[in-house]
Image (cartoon, rainbow, N blue to C red; front, side, top):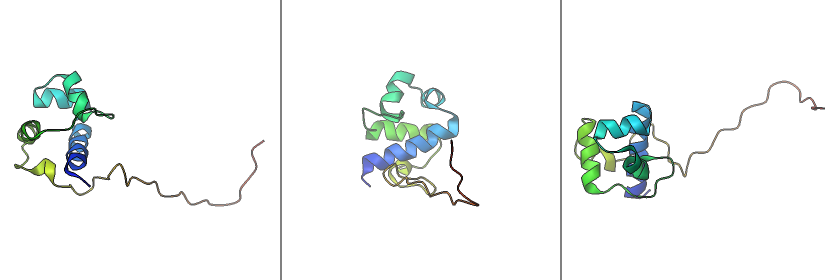
Length: 94
């Protein structure tokens, strides 16, 4: 995974922890529109070094935290659902 994807995945982890992009934007002191461009579900911009450090500071994370894959974070590319085991008989739906 490249550094752009790692930063995005870690940022999305923080977005989910605070309850969404709006709360995340407030926490890092940026506008919601600007924040959505790099932290939304369909980002159109990457996270540069300056913004990465601002995010880390706002969340009391050590320098470089956004650049290291965090445990428990699933990559979007590797996010494959496990099949649900079927129990009992299959019944046709009419």
